[in-house]
Length: 138
Image (cartoon, rainbow, N blue to C red; front, side):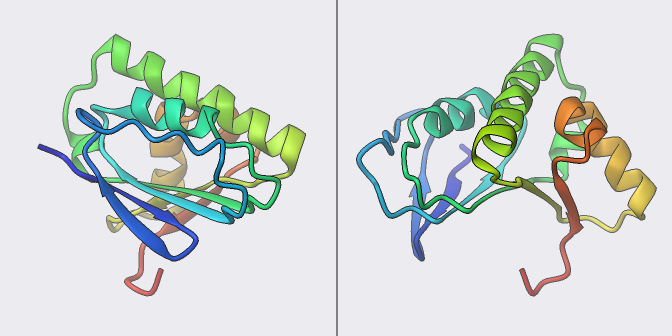
């Protein structure tokens, strides 16, 4: 079972996407959201982000695990990532929230971009996402 870690205003919640749905529409002071995620519950992240109404939100960070890239991803899973991609484009263009994609593996800049293009093609192609290699201090 995969637990997602969602950081909300320094309050870290460990959530099981098979059991928990989080409605953030009444959480008005949210500034940062961090999702430690794999490829199996991307739709859950999208649904949670769709509930965000906070005007204080400044950052959305996705930290996909290495298995997201070494396992065979089905077409339906890619569709879920692309739906998340469209939502992140919306956050960037309508609310100036630049999403961050943090990779916890040793990749050079071009490999980071290639992985990001496969999961989040629109925000990557348009330069609307910060691609970061995890260094242990983030």
